[in-house]
Length: 56
Image (tube, rainbow, N blue to C red; front, side, top):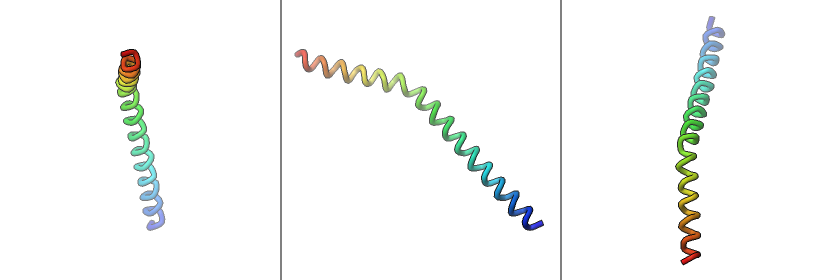
């Protein structure tokens, strides 16, 4: 009985860990997907400013 309890507790904590990792990865992917266009536009802006400084 005690062994089964310990076993089920360990499985439960493993599942918790897996679910947490999955949620974190999903959130991370979503954030990256949302932020990517912003990041790209910032890079373009910096490049434009850099080339503008060189020209003037």
